[in-house]
Length: 356
Image (cartoon, one colour):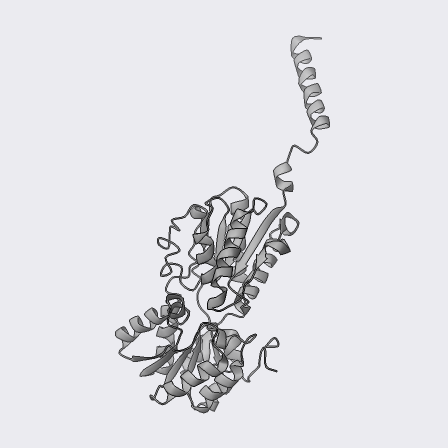
């Protein structure tokens, strides 16, 4: 046998031996089950909708069998001042675990707790953050400033809400309800409202006596006080008293309609269908789900969270409830109707609402 043939035979024998002795070495990394932890301040319908959309997108991307969401790594302490310690403790528990490969943080409170407890190792992906920049979670739109953290940012999202609302309604006295903390102001986008008010020349009328766990009755009391101050528009915020699973939101929206006060729903479609005048369309969470799922896959493939793009430039779509418009005596401009993606002719209450 020539030297070349002998050399080739030895190589083939060695390769065969390796394949026989180490049959799972090739592609072993692809067989890993990635375990994802989850923390939210408390239950909120947007969190669950976005989480479901993320899971669906991961499945569509072929990752259904490569990912696990352990039940003992899912934390949802609840809302209220008395729960803040539990948010911190839950974040610390997740960060102390070595069997968790990534953590999804849903909402401003959960993100804040996890970043405070950060072990600088486990990737953190933030979803449904009210305003990551103003909350100081990130340095800017292009850099999170934290190697193991990334989040979704929609530039000027809330400023555009106030601008479009004013374009359509042309109000003079916009009412806002919030609880008087930094997060409370972000959930009603107080700074953006004042910024647009300064640019457009309308007034912002505030009521800040509700608590973080405020009830529908608390917010209704605030609206009654605001109505006495001749408000002509109301921005529906992300407060617990406007969460259909935990509050009698219908009572509040009925009052606003009776007073013929136009409303813009921060959370979009769900509230517009149920009695709000208008908002940005949010019935389809697939875009958000795909955006975050792509981040998760890229992290599991070896990219650093900080290196991933955070800006989601999705074009806002408008929802309008024509039944509500007629009830309050408002005639939407034709160009807005033509540009709207969702037009509702009736009121449809959420199936999972607290009060049936």
